Length: 213
Image (cartoon, rainbow, N blue to C red; front, side, top):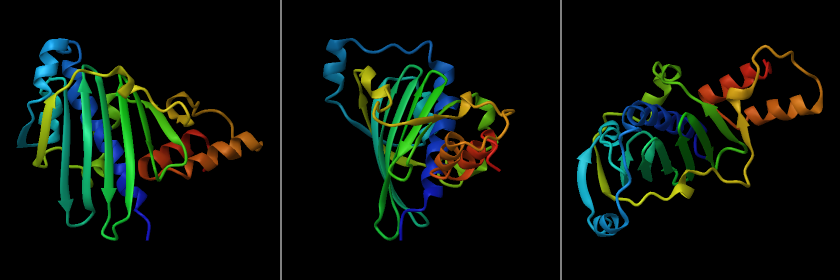
């Protein structure tokens, strides 16, 4: 039995929502630590029970790891990188059958990239806050107020962490014209087929934007 892609997609949307909600407000005021200070701080790891929204909203440039068990969805572990208006999360989700899938998300300014082991095509979106403020799907998997043990340390930001993989094709949902007529050529079929690698809100949005349904 494979990993349920619904949970993977929900995790990605949850991270987008939290990243937008937290990073937007402190993006302009956060500064990376100096090389000297960062080198010292990197050796100091602090473990504390916290919720993700508070962690992201703290305004610090840091690297955090986490791991927790969920009675319904198995176990989840991952690592978050935060710096200014940039955010990256790499997450492993293991279900009750010990099948593991991965999902990664990058937010750079207002541009968001999502890709994972259960997705044949990555997705790229420009996301204003209000598009996800009413999303209940994200809350069904990733609770912004869930208390989890995080191990965090100061981080000398690496700009390459916020670059999406160059060898992966990304379907840009924000650039698709919703009013374009449905085409019957091969390119249209390929685009619609790419939507099938998604799930939940992402798949619905993709199919609607491409007039595939």
